[in-house]
Length: 186
Image (cartoon, rainbow, N blue to C red; front, side, top):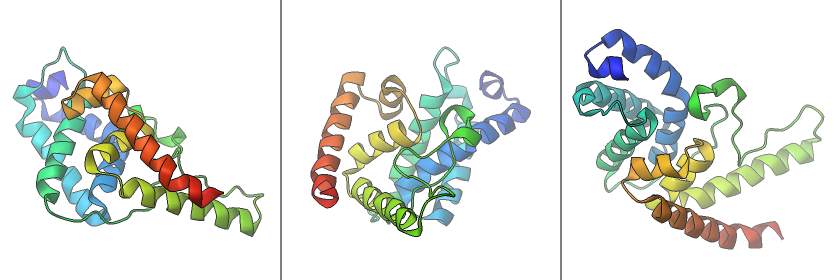
């Protein structure tokens, strides 16, 4: 990103490739619409280019990128209702897309019975519904932490809060998810 900040357009492409899957997963979970998510993704990287002069090379790139994405999603989706989305398979944090497994969705294994496959799919749908129903601040932290693998420090930088506040938001989000999900799995 330091090269992009200096105006090197060629250096933007590797950043887009590296962060495409995890960032698109994040945007999709925030926007709830695949096609709109792709548009927002392109707009985010356009903002990265146009705001390159504001990037501080002494600070990590990932939180800065997610801050731009979150702010852009908020402004683009202001007043819109979140649609429920299916958990995306693939799209890991830190560019490790091939080895990423969605932590809240289990894929049916080849040896699974049809019943096990249905239970895994239904469980993922229940979790995604519960996550989508969280208030935006909690959903943002949960998605950044569990689906995108950002550290609490990175999330704090991206959302403009102290790390302790982000941990508290995550605690309350997990408590809300527990309240919602426990009665459904008993």
